[in-house]
Amino acid sequence: MKRGQPQRLEKETQRRLIEAGMLLFGLHGLEATSTRALAMEAGVNLAAIPYHFGGKKGLYLAVLEHIVKIKLAEIGPCLDRVLAACAERSTGREVLVGHLREMTRVLVVAMLGNPESRACSQIMMQEQIAPTAGFDVFHETFLLRIHAAWSALLHRFTGLPLGSMELRLRTISIMGQMFIFRVGMPSLLKLVESDRLPDGYLEAITDICIQQAEALVAGFAPVCSGANA
View 1: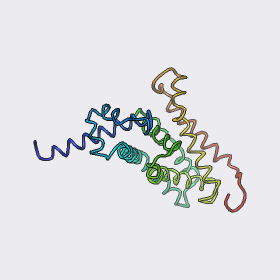
View 2: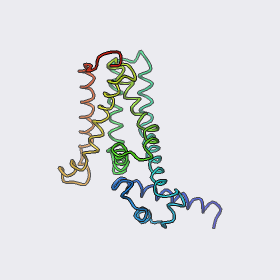
View 3: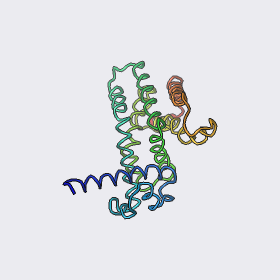
View 4: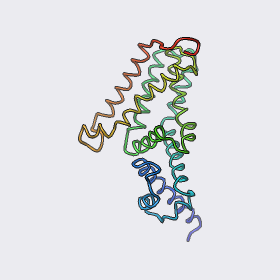
């Protein structure tokens, strides 16, 4: 066997198990997914899971870390641009609206753009609904980055204090309008009688989310009073 080949084989096994985990954990969740099903989907020996990841939970954590890595590669540059624009006090409203549109578009595509995106976002939704031991990693390294960018943008539009109760709730609200399309994807696919989004639907979802986000900041009126509004 050539030098380096065992290491390549190990990495290939790990890759296949992570891909199998993305599919099966997304479909069935952590607890309902068996190690046997994971090994069969990956086409590897059952013993490969404890050998490479220490068990099913270790593989799940590796899947979460993989999802965070690939999704941050997709959306990270956009988040950085938003934060930089918001930090510059001379940035005008028209430019900020452009960043709002771009960030909405990037996040919708990252969540719904293809079957892999939907598998990733399915696991993200499950972590929101029924957090596992991996939630802190997911929250600290991924969700908080998105939250920070939206908070900075909404702060500039509304003047709500950073860290205030209302700004936090407004941020969760605007993020939620995108998440709901992932949660409701099975119903939407049932309505259109297809196993994938027909042409034009992703663009329409993006436009709807942008329109609703713009409406929120255009018609903003605070609902909380006091210094922590």
